[in-house]
Image (cartoon, rainbow, N blue to C red; front, side):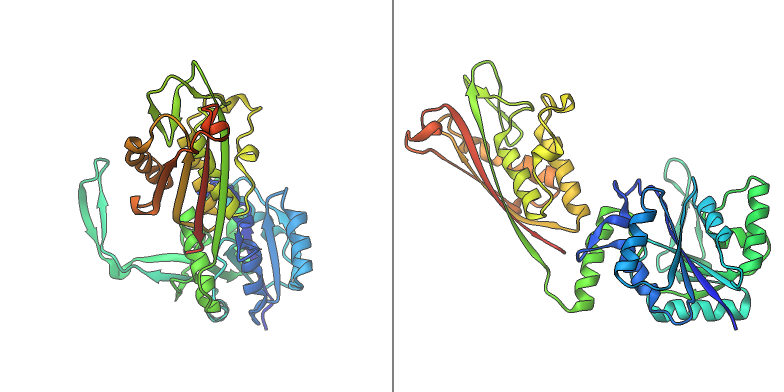
Length: 389
């Protein structure tokens, strides 16, 4: 009989994601919680051990307790590298451990069948890992991008997790590597360097590792597919107004428009783009631009609003949403904006990284009524539709 402990590695910095991916919400649950729930259901796993950032240990321990993840009995602090984090986890293993697995906390869709299979294989061979054979032809290139040679893809695999090993042997090789100053990217490489054969077990494309914002969109689509749900749709409305004053450029939709007055504001006062940002953030329930880019922060003095829009879109995409369409109405008595609308649409489409057909901009006067009619200011309304795929 084996006592199997699965280490869940979730102490990374998530630099490519732009924010800690273990906290990103998928269908209202953090990524890491999805991973723990999947592993909890695997009968061959006797115990889960979480390796997390120091600031996350208490949070995820409480979250696991709330969702009755009874197999999670230990949470340890990670190190400065994956290898050090795993070493910290190995040091905390219970004495009765015979098999130890390592699974990426950012792989929330690993199937129970795949985990069972790799554990059973490791019980027989002493070392096993999930992996996928390469489908594409692999080229090796020089520094200038010129092909040097073609590799035989029939012998090449993409490593996944879990990776499962004889506990005593993995601990021995880990201690030896640390003592020699070696640092390996995964445990298979560590065992490979020690001459320990690792048996590969076919994994699945669904066992996705979330690394970039694009992966979050795929993850949400997978969840919807599992639940046979239609894509979630979120509607957002944004409104902004700025006073017209002399001595300022008039910037709307990223376009500088010749006029005797411009809009007053902390940034470039692009009222159109500000309304767009608030619509996007509102649809995703992520606050407003005042929270992200406060006008008390000197870093945003004179800021290009299109650059701020790019940051807003990154935040929205990371939350798992795609911009379906955007409709903007600008309220201005003067100047006439119709000639500039095509260029504004191009600017917004580029900043939002969507096709031009998804962006609509209209301009209207208010027949001389109100502050816009009196040419005291310009206002803008924006409405957007976000979807989860």
